[in-house]
Length: 239
Image 1 (cartoon, helix red, strand yellow):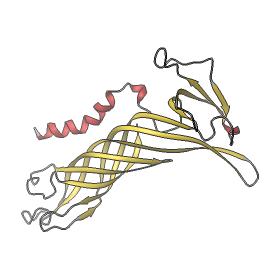
Image 2 (image 1 turned 30 degrees about the vertical axis):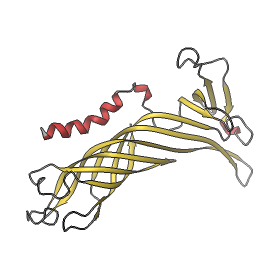
Image 3 (image 1 turned 180 degrees about the vertical axis):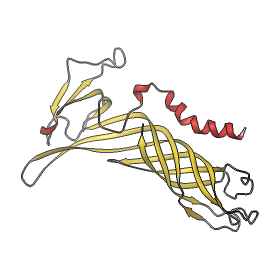
Image 4 (image 1 turned 90 degrees about the vertical axis):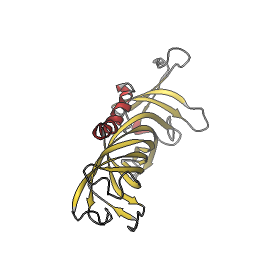
């Protein structure tokens, strides 16, 4: 029964993502898709964004009719290399809401004191599959070089929250078993929990609240078995 429980936790992120249509699972890039366009001092407007070569084309969504129907007659188009203060889309926010599936790793774990063992800050090899709900903010900016050449770039920020599950290792010895075993080895743990991520450009870092279950006969004497820890998690790759 324990193996079944671990298996359920491991596939839960995949099932969560499977509840949404496949075309709703996006990457973190600024690419084609549905956005909320937020211009300064204006109400957000739902659009479909299409990037073609060096052009950006935004099609309004006709929400009063069929959901998702595009207005292909009245669209906004601009050249990316010509965006500057006062131009169309300059300093506007493109907001994307999506389902997120990531491969992540727990960089550090802080475990509170247990028994006579003081608080621990540890790092061990591990990998987790994360699934959650994400919101990305893309803003078009531009700057001039010293040679007065215009450069346009996209500033990306975002955040998301969700669940994770995966496998890791942890040292097992007489200290963390309250002197109930003299074996010293790297035990395999099943780790699970919740996390919140913040993204800036290509870096995604989060805080996790998790629980570990030792997957061998010493789980009953391991002082950290199914006890909460707080960790720093880093996204490695998204699907």
